[in-house]
Amino acid sequence: MSNLLKGNFNTEKTVVDTNTSEESLEQRFEKEALKKLGGSIAFVAKKEVHWGDNDDSKKD
Amino acid sequence: MATQSMDNGTANTLNKDHNSLPSLGMELVAHMGDITRDRIQDMALENARNNLTAIQNGESLKALRNIDLGKGDKAIIIAAGPSLRRKNVAEQLLSTNYDGAIIATESSMLYCLRQGIIPDLVVTVDPHPKRIVRWFGDPDLTQADLKADDYFERQDLDTSFSEALRTNDEILELLNKYGPQMRIAVSSSSANTVVTRAHQSAMQVYWWNPMYDDMDQPNSVTQTLLTENGLPCVNAGGNVGSAAWMMANAVLNKQRIAVTGMDLGYYADTPYKNTQYYHEAVALVGEDRLDEIYMPIYNPHLEQWFYTDPAYMWYRECLLQMTAHATCETYNCTEGGTFFGDNIHFIPLSEFLAA
Image 1 (cartoon, rainbow over the protein chains, first blue to last red):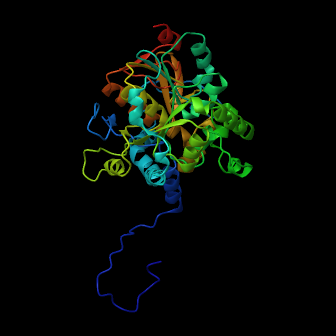
Image 2 (tube, rainbow over the protein chains, first blue to last red):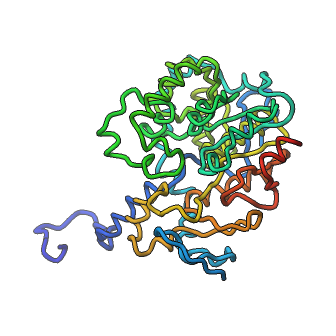
């Protein structure tokens, strides 16, 4: 596609194409599937409860 | 390597060596924290903001610290895995004079109430707007909803949910009847549909935040949430079953905690299509390569094979870490599934009840 579309002016700043490879349909499909694969909620290692007040009897 | 013939489209090669578990499955497990965050965090935080008013109609989880739920230092967690029915957990509970705490996931509420068990505490955490409310009875459930999402119909979590509309009416009625006698720990991440049902059914609501990140780190999302709503923040361990275990451990300070229905996997004869992420797994690798995602697990206590998926495997690893870090004793009385390890006493429920 980029070989077909040619600009007829010069940009003031250099434009960097960050999309180096076009995402295939298969990759997009996989990405959408991955989004639905996760757990119900987060897990935070080595933590229990943060009571959020001064009487934090069990703050890890 | 042990090989076991299986039919119904389940795993056909089962390894006792965890190092040789399917690499794609284990790769997904390694990224499950990130995948989960990408999937739920924005939704959960939006739900928390939407719940700011509803939070006024309930108490903070802090209040539970001052209430003795169940006698003694025992608690039993009732999760909704397939072993719950296969091992007749309710029957075993009711046949003894067990008087410790009973903590149920919302997904096992119907089972409990049907069997005549009113849990001392119910826990809910998943922010999904349509699925979780089904455990409470969805007043707005339609045939179109059922066609759009076959999550319950396919799974072994509660087979009665496959008879969806009738079961929906039943749980609506049961919860409306017993709700006033029940306490529920509702996460700020819960969808409005769930919050509304908890309030409608007159359950006593105790609010809390699930931890999203390390609160000691700068720019912690959880710390910001705490500032906004003032609720205690609890490490929910990836899913509601682990959250229920954490409630018993760190909120109620129970010292002997048994988990039931905590399969974190599937019986070997369960077809892949009846697993929670079947459609997503097929979308990811195709029907022919599902063995690369599902992981066979040999349970040495039962000398029996089970299998699991990346999400359950991640839950398993999270809960194993949580139990290793805790001072309480954890007993897995599921009598099935994949949850075993150095810090877990894997015993029959009858033994825990008798102790």
